[in-house]
Length: 222
Image (cartoon, rainbow, N blue to C red; front, side):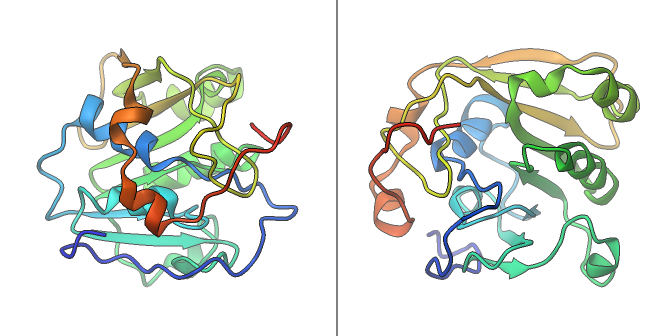
């Protein structure tokens, strides 16, 4: 982990169990910067990852940001235990420059987006299923009110598995990054593609050495 970054990291202490925990591969977070946002200009900024799980995304964010605040509603052993949707729990925590996260899949996804847009100072990026770009409720409550600047679609599939990162996993589900640049109202949303080959080029040996991962089992991919 880069010495210039500050991330709270510990060993995993609890299984995901019944929670909606699908770790985001570190390479998918790096692809946001390498192919969408650029890799420079973030080192003096603060980013929050409020659904950090075991820290797979926060670990990659530390490659770019000087300060990474990682938290989750459940004590996975990485970061602070804090409910992102409980405004009172965050009342004394300074607002970050960016919020970047993989929000819960179910009904909390919309609430996570709205909360992030109200809290971050410069930008928000959420890693979601491509189907999250559609839907009347999401359009009315989020996209129409706060138009995203970028939708970045992964060309290759990003495998997510329940409760663990499987580096060689597979999936039929398509994912994208939705990005907002706050303070700069978007007149249009740019649609871009994240090219294939990111899993191979942006997965590092240190990821396998430092982060929890396992071999694939059939039937548990998202």
